[in-house]
Amino acid sequence: MSAATEATLVDTELEELSDQRSLTEKCRNLARKNPLGAFGAAIAVVMVFAAIFADVITAHSPIDIAWEHQLVSPNWEFLLGTDQLGRDIFSRIVYGARTALLVGITASVVGAFIGLVLGVASAYFGGTFDLLFQRVMDVFMAFPLIILALAIVSIFGGGIDKVIIAITVPFIPRCARVVRSNALAIREIPYVDAARAMGFSHSRIILRHMVPNVMAPFLIMITAFVGQAILTEASLSYLGMGVQEPTPAWGLMLQGGAEEYAESAPWVPIFPGLAITLAVFGFNLFGDSVRDTLDPRLRSQ
Image (cartoon, rainbow, N blue to C red; front, side, top):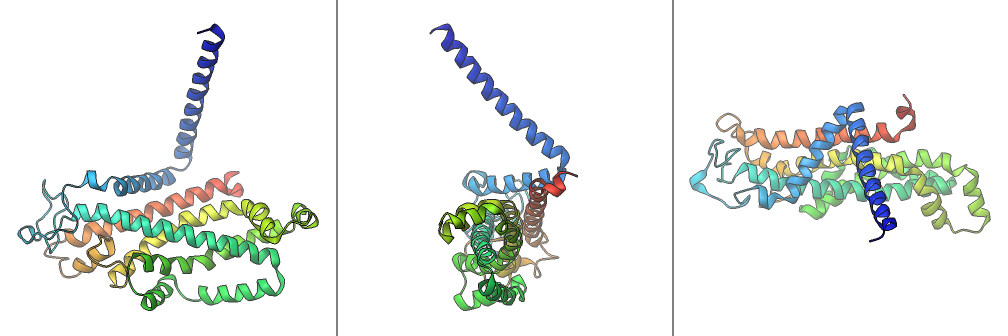
């Protein structure tokens, strides 16, 4: 190998090490500036890790009924105890993270994306279309999120897919409103007029010239929606109109033991409730940190 080739390889390795160090330093700096956001990100990472490696982490099935282990208190075999059907609570919480993330991430991404496109289109076209579109959004936003989700689930029925749809629909007007307010300012920028003058189609102007410039509020809305979606899914499951047995879900775990076993077996309602609290708290903190990082007005302070 020639000296020039060796020098090139050394330079490449040094650049990679420099990039890794710079990325590590950026993460450390962000953690120092926003420790609560770092804590929320850590909770989200742990939750994702648990959902992915649930088969490896757990030693018991989350759905198998074992009457001989009914309402066993936490011990070395059952770390968080068992429920009224003898199922391991730790396994159900870990597998329930899959359900929470599936519903939360899917509903937030789909709802925010549809709201993004509709909000930008409303700002771009303006006039009568914008007026009528905003009145339709007002109708949807007049109902609290959980009420609208309950109405949709009552029409289409339960199940994970129906729950995702029920939570996605209320997210659309909320994202569309935020995105529209940013897109109204972008519509007045000269390059949009230049794109019109060049004969570009409306869809190209919206998707290629306006949407990329409202990605900051879009990303903020996604991270904020995940926590809301997890809480809404748990609420629907607790009310018996969300995820159905035997699918592990935190809301279902509360439905089965929140009141009846609050005194005789407090571990049955405490641990699922703690999981919901930490998940929502973590994603809300992470969403706030994303907002602080992407908002130039807050970043400059």
